[in-house]
Image 1 (spheres, rainbow, N blue to C red):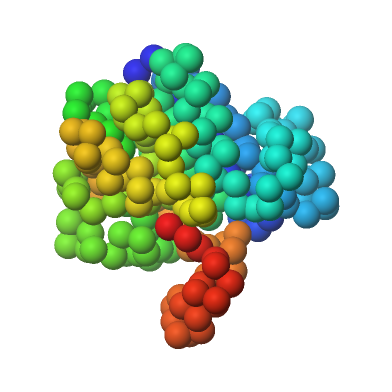
Image 2: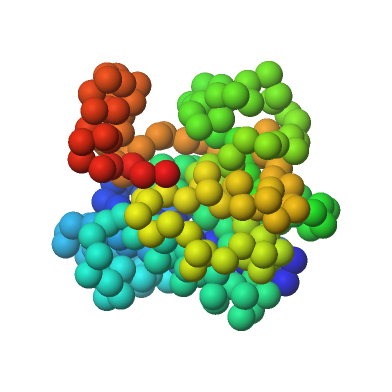
Length: 238
C-alpha cells in the first residue's frame, strides 16, 4: 500500500479520545501514514485540550468549526474531504472512532489484509468488550472468532480501512446529505461496485460504544425511548 490517512473523528468524550489517540500513535505502522483528528464541535475546553495534545503528541488536528457552520455531526464533510486527498495521493483511508482502542498491530494488520486481497473494498476489525467478547456492532460475528469473513453485512467504521480502489469507485459527493452516518451506505456501495468487504475477527479492537454520543446508550437501556427520540428529533440517520 502506497500510503494511508488515519483519521479519528472526535466529539467531546475527551478522556476516552486520548486513550484512543495514545493507542493509535503507538501503532507499529510500516506504511507511510498521517494521523489526523477531526474535531466536530467539541466544547471550547475540550478543543483546547485537543490543540495542546496536537502540539505535544504530534497528530494533525482539523477543527471543523473552521471549515463549516453546519452543526455536528459532520461525518459527510470529513469523508468527502479525505476522499479527495486520498485520491490525489493514491492513499487508503483508515478510520478509527474515538470510542475504540487498537493494539499496536491492528492498523498494519488491516493494511496487510487489504494488500493481500485485490478485490477488497472495506477491511474492518471486529469489536470486542473488556472481556474479549465480540460486541456491538458485530454481534452477528459471534462464533467466527479468529476468522477473516468475506461479509455481505455492513462494516462499521469503528476501525475500518477504505481501500484506494473503493475510493476510486464510490463517489462520496453522491451520498445522501440528509443522513448522519454512512458506514451502511458505503458498505453497500462497495459491494455494488464489485468489491468485497472483509471483517477481520483476527484483529479485534476494544469498543466502548457511543462514548461521544451518550444519548445512544438508550438503545440498550430503553430501546423504546431511543427509537422515539430518533424518530421525533431526527437523530442518528443512517
